[in-house]
Length: 98
Image (tube, rainbow, N blue to C red; front, side, top):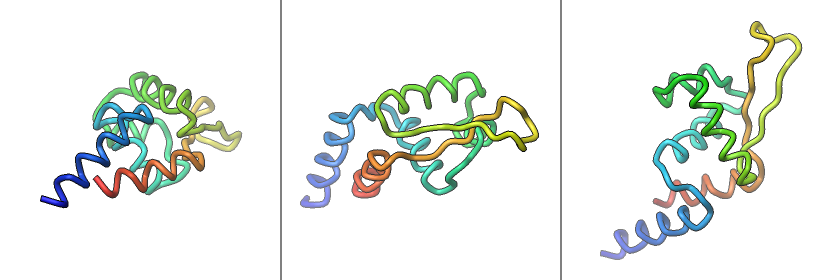
């Protein structure tokens, strides 16, 4: 019973910081596991197209949880490489509790 209450509390905390879908949580976990992951690789993990991935990550970026960069030496010139902000890393702790 206590574990169930802790899980509910963790999920409620996630929604208060704007994590409202499982895909958002999975995206944060994937970027945490592999900092610098490309939008293409993240799309494969999330099983959505690259455009939808960029939209989802844009939402997380607006919330201050994720950031991205491009790299000159990347095989694809417009590839985005994602990483978590400090706030995003704090959300990971909440997700792991849930």
